[in-house]
Image: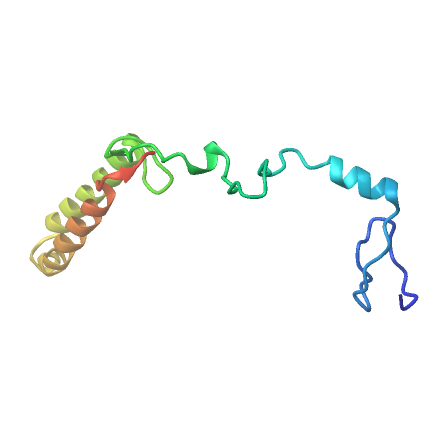
Length: 124
């Protein structure tokens, strides 16, 4: 080792990257900390197999328009967004003839936003 100051829990020297020696008691403690070791084949010719929990197929995918998921709003959020979009469209149309030009551009934007708000989201 290069003589750099190394803490008691360090496994490597931060300056020269040489491994720090671990005494036998510490090595035994580290080995005991492993919760669930990988299965070891009984014989030399037996193939290794992963645990059942790692290879079982995932359940069916479930989609919903009203349930809340990680990427979508729940029913209240979707209702509020829909109300705000429709109110903004009504407000622009109520402003008069000049705002009608803005409404022509706002209608497709509202349809696209409503399509994205009400699309099915993956729940599971």
